[in-house]
Length: 312
Ligand code: GLU
Image (cartoon, rainbow, N blue to C red):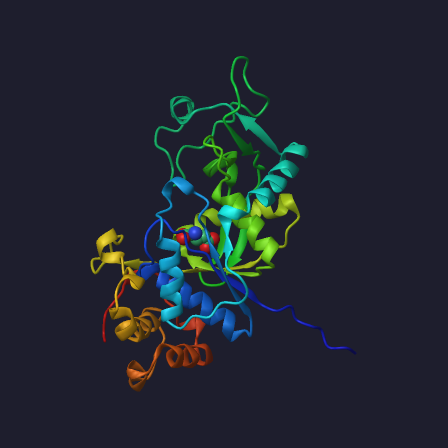
């Protein structure tokens, strides 16, 4: 019998250049790098500069420099979402052609006025479906939405366990092309992951509730579903969401990074529940990473968020 050939693991790190790399993104980059490399996989880098009004000039280059300084090596060319409009337009076209996507003329204010729920959920106000059966007379298209199905979307997260979400009850038909003409994040992510053959998505657990929408789009577009691992978020010492100031490592901006980047990596490993030997604290970034690829234990990664402790 011929042995089955296992597909290569393809992971990625996909930061948005809307602010400098912070401790939370460093931890995600590290977790994704280690798990992918441990499986002998390819690790890709994608700059999610799709939301142009929020992109800060120079930050993307800063991110690349930072990752390089910290010893991360990615495979192939960096993918820039701002150059991928044609691919997103083609996917959107397929959704429109099949009738699962439709133009929507509602403004946010209208949705809030009409929505029945007194308090919006975590995902904001559930879209009440006003334009589902066509634009009301006198209305013109602003955005494009995808019609959701009335059944839960479930998946097994490699870290957080089983997750199910009823899209109709929690988000409703969601936007795939925004009123400002930009493609929505959910569409871009699934198109890019599929185009790059990404089969392992590792990212922060703040995106856990976005995943069912993305899986739904993958199903509609006939893309394979990657394995998901949502990693714990970094909080401030009191367990609250990090402020910009606490969070910004602004890793590339300082020469410190060259001197002290290895300490950040060491402490990030500890945040991820790993137990690097003390002597490694004085090693260079590349050595720390290669130790970590060899010894990384997914089972040791905490399932809950927590503060980033600087031991070094
Ligand atoms: N660009 C997103 C962020 O920086 C991550 C998207 C993803 O990993 O799917 O939070």
